[in-house]
Image (cartoon, rainbow, N blue to C red; front, side, top):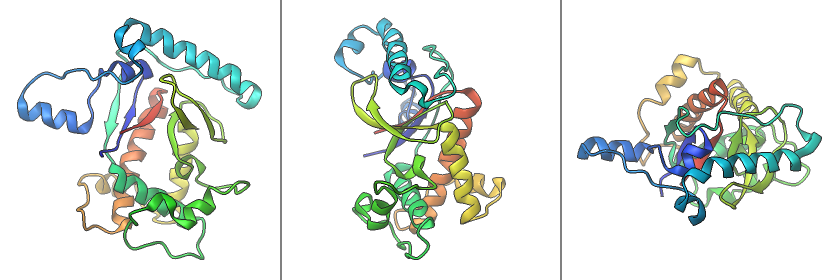
Length: 236
């Protein structure tokens, strides 16, 4: 199963008015137009005009539930045709980056050379997610699937606009934590990171090479998310 990362309005996301990396390649090869693939509950798909209202109502409810836990209002561009950006780190790349971060904050444990098949059950990753543990990279390692363009340090589990339970984080905090991860491990320049993202690694690549590729993809997308003040989410 492919893993893409989407940056843009949630209205546009649920209407399906965007392309994954794979969609774009397929369209260019077939030379046919893009066909929207709505993502969301049937009620929204049957009434596309109601998607925007549903997203805005969901955001209002989220603000109410968070209360004084956030200092900055949750507000971002929700127009159906707001700009969007996508990338494909793949599950192998994303999982490698998550483990790279988990092992970085537990230096006494040696990071695997290759990504384990059951990487999400890795004991060091579980330690980073243990109750009471203050992870330096929480907005990456704590199973976050949706990041909102608002500065807050905590992650939380909530219901999305399409009524799925998911863990939510902050694009602002993720961007900072990715920068801190680079400073603590690779110390790579911006130019080097761009180079990492030019070519997807082979299936035989090491965990570190896959992590570097995913780091480049996420770093670019989170920069777009913070710069344009847009949500960012996993799509699979």
